[in-house]
Length: 239
Ligand SMILES: [Mn+2]
Image (cartoon, rainbow, N blue to C red; front, side):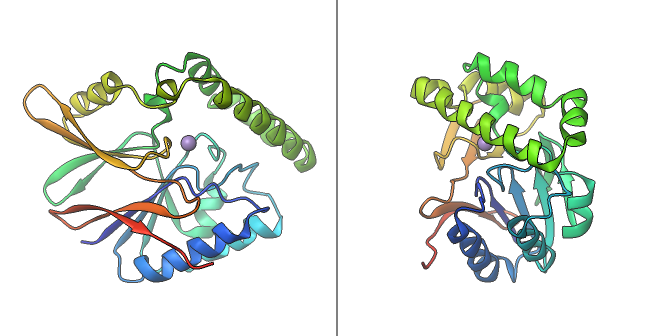
């Protein structure tokens, strides 16, 4: 079974080049795949499934036309993706974290932001943003207001990431080891950090393997699996 894993496209209406990149990627790597997993931050911001703007609609249409089974996970930017989006695209929403089986092994999937435990102010904010109360209140607002708040929050986030040390922005080894041990797996796939790599971690009884997906500016690194093989691959899109 051929599975493709991507994350962190951060699609934004001001950068249609990324939208074209996704289209190229789907054509090149997903037409013969069985399953495509988008592990968070497909969008730079998602202000609700009722967003009527052309950019959002185009992506929905693009995903609807994908011929393989589509799975999507929330990232820290697009955690408001909901049921309507999934119905319209045919995607299945995965909880973060989620276990899937590849071959005869369980593999853990996550966006990855929950593992950045050194960034305490972000983790506090994450709890608020992911609460039902915040999300209900936000989604009841007019689209224009949601758009405004979302822009402000992105500005704050940029200020924060600009002020925080590099290692604080990365996952901590302790948190990824804990997640692998708790879920009894030795493979973890995540995005978020924009630092594509395969890392080894020493678990109690074996070596844990952590596959980190890339962002898309200006090219990306994605993961391709068959039942027994795991391969991080580069995708350069034509501009
Ligand atoms: Mn992220």
